[in-house]
Image (tube, rainbow, N blue to C red; front, top):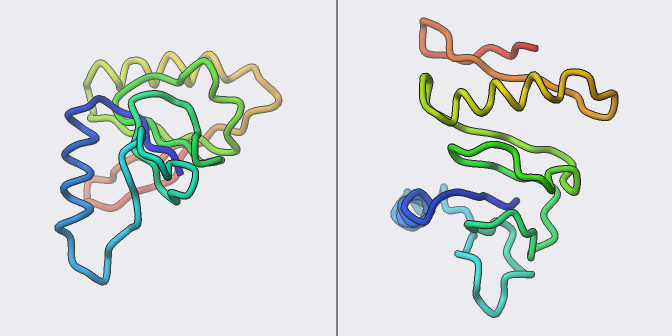
Length: 117
């Protein structure tokens, strides 16, 4: 997996992954190290899959121009944010493409999630 986001978001995620419960640890690294290719989860500011990732997670940003190189792309954003508006634009732009399967998850009023699309 490649996770792309701003430096601040990635640093916060990196810290959270290190201090979480030991049995929930996910091996990962920040991009730019000597062993990027060996990382199961790579945190990066650029959508370059140095680890050969087929899964891309984009934090609060639109789809990168090179998103087709990934088998699956996830975008995460806060409701009502600028990233939410970009996600809507991306969603509409992908609607006419036969080579893309779109779906999304929406939070329910009870705090769960429901698949839509």
